[in-house]
Amino acid sequence: MISNGVNGLKERTQQFAIETIRFCAVLPKKQEFLVIGKQLIRSSSSVGANYRAVCRAKSRADFISKLSIVEEEADESVYWLEILEGLGMGGNASLKNLKSEAAQLVAIVVASKKTARGRRNDE
Image (cartoon, rainbow, N blue to C red; front, side):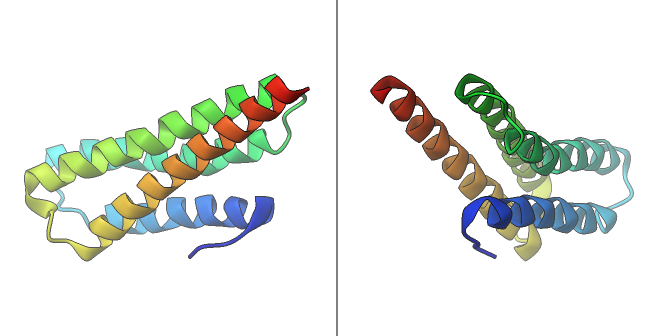
C-alpha cells in the first residue's frame, strides 16, 4: 500500500478510509460497536479529506496547520482501533493492518511537519 509523493499519499489516505469503512461494516451490531464504528469512520475518512486540503494550502503556515489536523485525525483513528482491541477484537487481522496504517500515517505527517518547520526556519 506504500506510495510515493503527494498523489501517492492522497491515494493512500483515501484507501485507508475505504478499508476502514469496509471493516466497520462487519463489526458486531451491538450498540458499543456501532458507536465506535461511526467515530472510526469519521476520523479515518477525515484523514484523507483533510490531506486534500493540505495539498491546497496557501502558505507554509497553512500547510503546517492543515497537516496538524491530519495528524490529529489519524491519531484519533489509532485510538478507536485500540478501543476495539480492548473490546476483544485484537486478534482481527484487518484491525491490526488498519492500526498499523494509521500509525504509519501519523509518522509520515509528523515527519512532514518537521521538514516544513525546518524549511521555514532556513528561510
